[in-house]
Length: 164
Image (cartoon, rainbow, N blue to C red):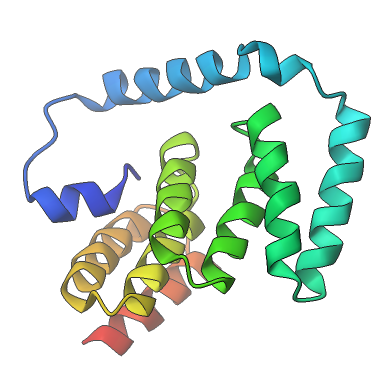
């Protein structure tokens, strides 16, 4: 699913056909992964930093965890686990606009993963932007219908029911 917050907010059809949009996303991801900074941190070092960040987040020390996740995203700008950790920290620290930005980026680089879109709806709810949350959850439900039933579809339906 492409970024539902943009589509819902603008209420305008997307000019790019599906194949071009997918290719653009793949090109963006490849360009980010080719940045020189992506090669300055070994996988072993990244794993150690991630483990520390994850442990801090699990302890509820989101401000400290934020620093580590933020560092990881500088060196690994498309690494999903680090981006998810960063978004979670923003969310727990009540920095909802920043969390929305990260979840939106995740939705762009992993368009098939509805959990990112659901997290967007949840952040909109936390910001009390109910109209935008309703419009976005509607889009998520439409995409969920095209996928096999699972937890994401159930979460989207629960959010839809809550909002309506």
